[in-house]
Each structure stands twice: as structure tokens, then as C-alpha cells.
Length: 160
Image (tube, rainbow, N blue to C red):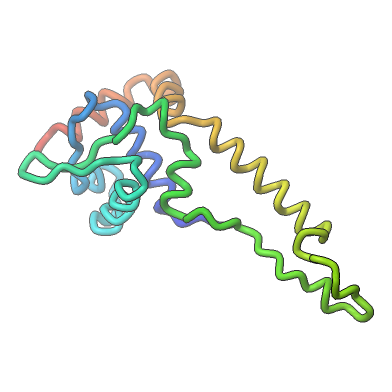
């Protein structure tokens, strides 16, 4: 399984926004500069989060993005699904039904042990991501890297 790199960018962006005062907009160009990312591509990721209800956008000279919900109510799975979509990563095509003498009355997509294994693994993966919140990551980052929050906030607040 391979996710787009925008997932990492979006999660970091959400963490930065969790550190800002509630409702305060973060300029996406400044955020892109902070991480040395292409601004237009980061903006696309943030717009996808707006469409998913994870972020809200604010227009105007002091505009940008902010979290649409409290960070403890936003999971990593919310971010991943907003960017990657809800479709399963594994798609069983039921090829076991193509084998010689296969019973054509069997739903091989449902009965295939390989498909069941992959669906179970994805369920565990999604459950793990659903347990991790943006607030939890932000708190952990603050404990592990005590200066990270203040440095990020100062950079993002500076007009450049």
C-alpha cells in the first residue's frame, strides 16, 4: 500500500493548526514555506480537507485555513480518507472463480481466504488510524520536541 505524500503534509498541517488558537487561520503559502513544500500542491491537500469537513477556509488578507473541529475530534483516518478516498486498498476480483471446475454459484470475492486476509488487515489498519487523533499527535510532538510548537507558531505568524 502506498499513500500519496500529501497525507504526511496534511497531518503535519493539522498538527500545526492544532497548536494555533481556535479559529485562527494559517496561511497555506506560509505553511508550505515552513516545510519547503510546493504551495499549490499543499493548498490542494488542504482544500480536500475542507471538502471533508476537517478544515475550514477563510478568505481575505488574513485568510487561510483552520481546523473545522476540535483536534481531539479529528482522527488520522479522517485525514487519510479525505485525501485517499474511502475505497479499500485491496480489491479482490474473484479470480478463484476462473480456476478450472470452480463452482460458479460461489461468491469468490466474499469466500476467498486471500480477500478475507486482506480485508482483515485493512480493518486493523483503519482501526489503528481511527484511534490516533490530531490532538494526541500534537501533544506527543510537544513532549518529544518541546520547542517545536513555539517555533512553528512564530514562523507561521511572521509575515516573512
